[in-house]
Picture 1 (cartoon, rainbow, N blue to C red):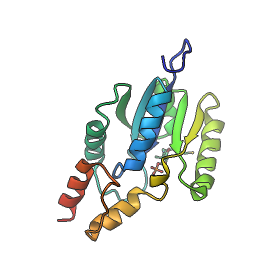
Picture 2 (tube, rainbow, N blue to C red):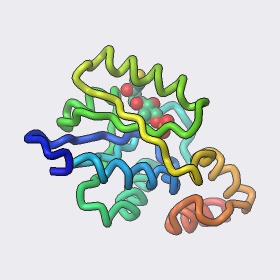
Picture 3 (cartoon, rainbow, N blue to C red):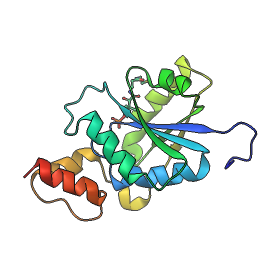
Picture 4 (cartoon, rainbow, N blue to C red):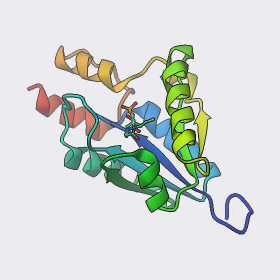
Length: 165
Ligand code: PNS
């Protein structure tokens, strides 16, 4: 067990992942190193106009996380803490790229704690090369055919090209 404790620590890494970026993968790599099990969870009911259907986001995530044996991909509807409880997770993992992320993340973490005090939110910082990276900007650049290399996995690059062909 990575934690060396009797009870394995399962963490949920929730998000829209529309699409997954190398910043998300960097965080998954860090999470997979310190938690016994990491469940990457695609939120189904977030009020946004997604580019990729949930099914496609899951398929991409499964392909790009295949090498991590303690990482699995799932999706959820409704409240994150209920899903975490249902999956036996004691940690919610979130990434903070910059101070601008902090306020929203603080609100979410505190509200999730209010609903479910047993589940702890853990924040990790992605590598600095990804501190400015977001799925929203990736989509915008891909739409104009100007996505720089190295920001998303090759599979995502392919899928983006197909979407905006
Ligand atoms: O990648 P995102 O869009 O920043 O992820 C946000 C997400 C999906 C983690 C958040 O919107 C969420 O947890 N949604 C599920 C509904 C929920 O539990 N809302 C209460 C949060 S306090």
